[in-house]
Amino acid sequence: VILTVTPNAALDITYEVDELVAHQSHRVTAVRQRAGGKGLNVASVLTRMGHPVIATGLVGGAVGDEIRADLEARGVAARFVAGGGCSRRTVTVVSALHGDATIFNEPGPELTGPGWQSLVAGLDSLLGEATATVVVLSGSLPRGVPDDGYAELVALGHAHGARVVVDADGAALRGALTAGPDLVAPNRAELARATGTQDVAAGVAALRELGARDVLVSCGADGLVLMPEEGAGWHARLPVPLSGNPTGAGDALVAAVAAGLAGDSGWQRTVQDAVAWSAAAVLQPVAGEIDLDDVARLAPQVLVEAR
Amino acid sequence: VILTVTPNAALDITYEVDELVAHQSHRVTAVRQRAGGKGLNVASVLTRMGHPVIATGLVGGAVGDEIRADLEARGVAARFVAGGGCSRRTVTVVSALHGDATIFNEPGPELTGPGWQSLVAGLDSLLGEATATVVVLSGSLPRGVPDDGYAELVALGHAHGARVVVDADGAALRGALTAGPDLVAPNRAELARATGTQDVAAGVAALRELGARDVLVSCGADGLVLMPEEGAGWHARLPVPLSGNPTGAGDALVAAVAAGLAGDSGWQRTVQDAVAWSAAAVLQPVAGEIDLDDVARLAPQVLVEAR
Picture 1 (cartoon, rainbow over the protein chains, first blue to last red):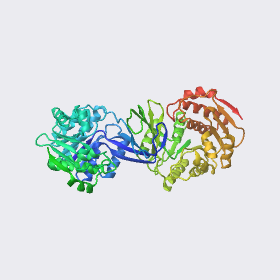
Picture 2 (tube, chains in turn green, cyan):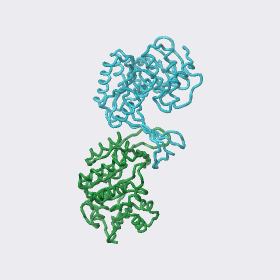
Picture 3 (cartoon, rainbow over the protein chains, first blue to last red):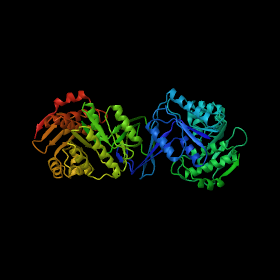
Picture 4 (cartoon, each protein chain N blue to C red):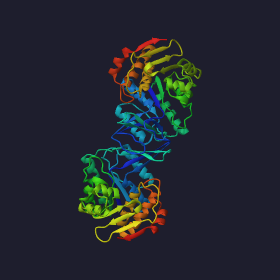
């Protein structure tokens, strides 16, 4: 089984309004809400693609109840840990007139030491029960958790014999590297933020200095570049990029990588799937969803080359 | 005991941001949330002022759990009815730079017939158990409820021997009048919306044509005008109006009126209290709160005259 860990899960609320005007009162014409956070999207995509997966992470309070209920309704297996306070919400206001979004991100609970340790203990117990081959650590760390929080979880995964994938940004990504995660998957902007360089090869080298092993860099319309610790690199892309909703494309990519590692598919097949799943996610209106027919249609179109 | 009925309760969420810019992403620096809806504010003020009160209404879903939890934490007795779907939220975004608020009001659940009937049955059972002398019906009706929804609740209160106060707007206010509520308490804008005239005397006459009995019109800084069905009218005001937070001032006024009716205080004392409680509420940062010292200080200052 694959485990995804979301330390800072959220309830993503979307409001539709006719037009957003600052300092006025708005009648919301439609409300949608959905469990969010990158690791939950990864688990959702893996579930849709038929891969055994359990989502874990810190979820609490009444907002946490809504997150649990949504995942249950969507058929995504979850075993969350409480102890981290009430989960955060995000509110995205979509204006019918302009079509674009105004976003409000709650800061989320500030974690104390015991809160974080309850997540560590919960993951430890889950790893003891389920034979997890791959653990995916995704998204931001809650406030109050040290930057090297993910390093502790990487080491825990390794202690249980699992391979560990980290999809994080900035200090949380850098902090994970000391424990040698098997694969990190920054996009180009995240790679630049973590290393201070815009150059992909130099950025990957910098991550490896810090402890990274295999590095997969997603480059949006240019597809992805995989730089394994050993052996040749790979570049994979669609001949013509798709337009659509980029939210969640990175999570679908990470889901494909986790599935590839879990199935020992080899890099060539894994990067092909990663591009196909990511592109199929772009065709969905919300993050965490994917259509198997889209994947089946797109996968043969992916151009894969060693580099 | 006084019963307050809030058919369309809400969870009021306030976000602080540095500056609201449409079509951008915002880090929320502080989150506050509080049970809202006019009848809950009335119950909260009565509780603070030491009057026995029970809040009822339709509350449901995970948001409803947050409403219940907040009232419990504030010591406000409540006995809600489920069956109306998940309660609505309001989100108020306060910009530190401008100080003013941008508001998003969720539409709330659309009620079916059984949902409304569960509220009616719940109120009937509560009226049967508790010896309620006054019932207060406050705020908007949920979507899907006919405009005369409040008339059914007025008749139910009367059948149990209680006096019924209605604080509603527009069609919900007009729809309540056919059942002859003992007192309605529009502000000037609400009176104009319900009757089509800006003139207070003409507006009150129009309400009475529709079935109103005692009418109390709140006029903001000008205090209030009470036009009883029988006997002299009253005008009450502070010599110098207070500045502050007007949200919830009307609810404090209604709370004082309900307390006056419950205690048979007579009009002179009731309108004096109504102005004092309302002014004291203006000094509070949130609706539903009141300081007894403010009330004690303000009440002797109120100017009351027959008219």
